[in-house]
Image 1 (cartoon, helix red, strand yellow):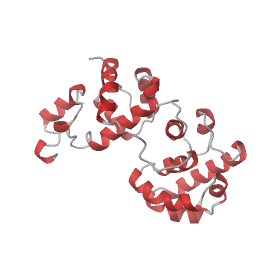
Image 2 (image 1 turned 45 degrees about the vertical axis):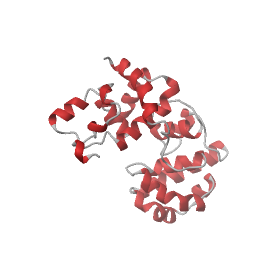
Image 3 (image 1 turned 90 degrees about the vertical axis):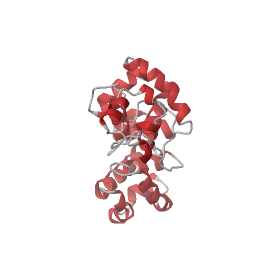
Length: 224
């Protein structure tokens, strides 16, 4: 099976396994998602979701974030890690949104990527989930890991992996593709000891049999 054929089969199978797959960061508008995504770097969505209710209640507009005293914001987001650099990114992006975009989060890749502290991955998250625009594919650690295990790319850099995926995955599935792989990575295809014995798409994974034969997969009795 070629990489393209495998992707064609995965696009059919994954939505059946994860029909409700979605972004697991809590948000109500594009600004909240932008902030939550910046906070999610090197941090779990669960931890971010524990921090953002108080943050979103205190800061309701881009102007609020831009004017926020750094020390106060750092205290609120400390548990997400790298809190000083995240505070700088949030305040910088918010200030640019106020100064250059009338206080509204822009909805194009060029303008989002042009905000301080906003990389392509963050822009893809916001565009796909807040604006419903498939401009690219979010490539996080789960997507990288599963893309290698499915053998649909040999690249190791996130942006090069994204380019490979964009050639194989139909554009209408770009946003969901990331959700499907992230959900599968969190629920079955763990970094250590993947649960191959219960994997719903085992037949489509060329790495699965290797993990099972080598004993790297989680034992069946341990994954029940």
